[in-house]
Length: 254
View 1: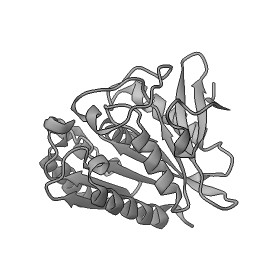
View 2: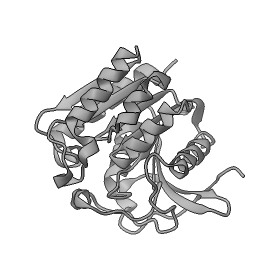
View 3: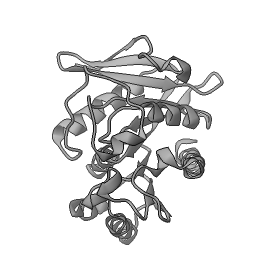
């Protein structure tokens, strides 16, 4: 059955974020909370779906969705799994979403089913251009984004921030169809929420594999930045938002 979208009240403490709150229900499975940030104007608008990292759904992703919407995109930050934690949790302000799916491995079939359901849902939002959709993922969300696009799934662009890059991703690089923007800190490590797979050399190796396969990739490496610097360094945040907007405008506009 297709996912169902319904309006819902803002979670406690998020009223000031000025977004539309919805629930995306996979009938008989789970309910995923999502924040919809709409640009000004009549639309229809290209869509970008944001997937959070292992630390869980948080206000910082809603803020990012709102800032991306300022570039003319219908931006949706979704709680794609419940709970969260780890070393990176101290960098974000959590938003509870206890009805969501259990946390999946980023490369699991269940993760792909979740992403597919969310994409199916956001394409039906009022004002959405169903044919112009991008994925953004941070950390575990970045891994799910990469796995989705490397499986040949159809989106028009992908952005990954502080993602993990297992060697099998490099081996799958010839399958990539969508242009991709990689954003990564050179000091990414487990100390602030990363893992051995988020080491900057893993990111560079994946970028090299994409280039060798002739795939469209842009990569930006932030010198000295850690796994969650997008949430802690205001200057880097502004730079990333600017780059993301420009990338999406190039690849989602007619």
